[in-house]
Image (tube, rainbow, N blue to C red):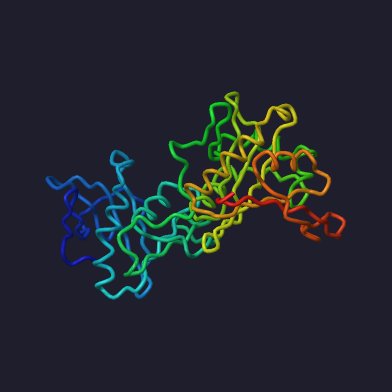
Length: 322
């Protein structure tokens, strides 16, 4: 699939890549973005397929951080749809968060899940699609980025889990008193913890599944809190949290729950946030009470056990109108 006429924008010209075009982008480009004046190649695109057209994109290192990839995709999409495509599909590697964000800015939506071996580098891919009626972006986000990159009350700060948190996260989640409170009371493997820190937490945030954050009191990782099972159509989400034993009793958990609760209501747009606790976890129950949650009842057999039997949990919730 090729362009027959250049597409001119205020920032660049998108034109067919001829046989003499040399671009070190890792693929054969079908179109290149060049400077409005001159021949400098700033970016490249490649398309394949018919009704469902796959797209791959690249931006020159010196032009990155300027949202050029999203602009190229926006400029090219009408041409591809006019040529007969009914869907554009991008499959960036899950570890390439910049490429995922670029596709989202261009209006692509994460509607295809994570596919093994489907990325343009042969690794896991997040599949994003664009239809003719979706507009020029950005794609609506279920879970927005944190304002300023974090949530803080002056005592603690919450920030997204990051690759540099791997060792702290693995050590923390491998503590018996922490994983005992997990949905499935088992420690993570090293590979699972690395995957969560390196890409899964970030990708799940971008696709609107969950928002996993580090609790930081100024001296580093002290635990995590997350907003999970977000269902915008009914306006609900679940909070889960854990703290290092050495900082318990300082009110950090209550502060973290309050920060996430306010963000969920004001920024995410939820109406109800709920949490579950073990019947005997009185410390976690006290945290929820202090954060304004009300006990709603017992969920029979709410969670599994390693022995095969299911265990009851207490259900707590707070409404935006409370």
